[in-house]
Amino acid sequence: MADAYCRRCGEALLESVVATEQRACCLNATPIVGICPTHGPLGPHHVVDTAGDARNP
Image: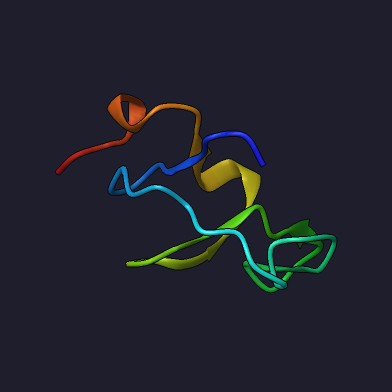
């Protein structure tokens, strides 16, 4: 997986068994892209390419 970061906090996503072809994000058919250490499994709509693109509250 290329570098991917959580859109919410900017943490680098972890890749594991769940971050494959399994579909479970948001209780629908969205694929899991990676795991944020803070926010858990994320779909592609919660992922950015650089940490600087994250929404920091």
